[in-house]
Amino acid sequence: MDIDRKQLIIDAATKSFSSFGYKATTMDQVARLANVGKGTIYTFYKNKEELFHEIVSSLIKEMKAAAEEVIDDSQPFFINADRVLYTLLEFRTEHQLMIKLLQEEKEMGTPAVAEVVQRLEDAIVNYMKGIINSAIESGEIKECDPELTAFVILKLYVALIFDWEKTRKPLEKKEISQFFQLYLMNGLSK
Image (cartoon, rainbow, N blue to C red; front, side, top):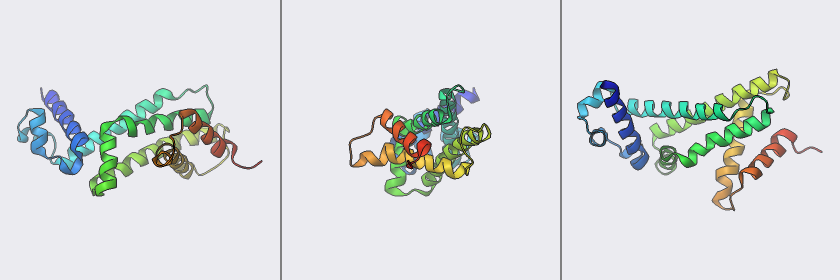
């Protein structure tokens, strides 16, 4: 029974954070949405921050599972890296919670939200770092700083997917993959 109430609370909080943002979500609101007493929430979580962090941790696990689904060991590093990044960044456009958090961070700079957005970025960089390390060890790519390379790859993807389309026609997935290949696999040298 406790698990059911805990899940009700998590679902209600996710809905509230997704609709109203972190700052505007209250424990009273979560209790109403979950149809439980506010005291019930406090049997599971000591405050809103703890509840928020559990939801974000679940989101990170979900992102990692989605990334692992698209990896094909028979494919080269660059194809897998391309698939993983595209999958992870789709969370930014398909998951209402991510959209609301990014919007709140940009518009209000809420410290708790900025910390979570950084945590999500760190999770993506660390995941990509592991893929890069494997590619280095297998001799598929040359020696490089895996963390810095993961960071650059992520920022390139973010720029191509989100920043570019703020003022220009959005790129198709195929075009993004081609740019990824050009700049990272082939480089710009002749």
